Length: 119
Image (cartoon, rainbow, N blue to C red; front, side):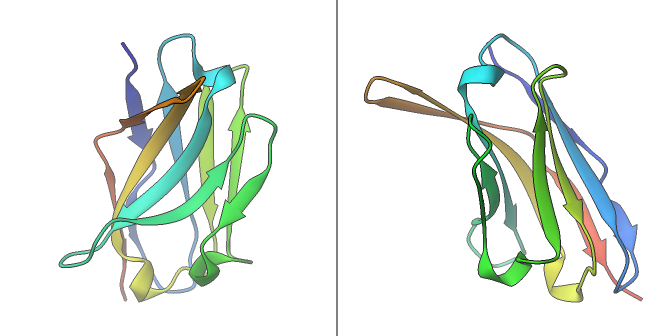
């Protein structure tokens, strides 16, 4: 059983920073791709950033240069450093773990953490 627990959300002013963390239970973290997604009210969930087992990263155009995803395999944790936050970054942020075994892909999701950017 895989559990993902997010932390670090909150209220921040425009231009501020937040760091989200996601701790994964179980023994599959080291063989799984990780990612952060977000969902704003009335909008579909969208990819924010992903990081592969090998450390290759990918970002949504809207966050490039402002957000940084990283992973700590020793602690089974993935982080999302968010700088220069904008009101449009306001959303519930979800941690994702993607496990691929041969051709079968299984996704696990955290419960979400609210990020609100407002003055």
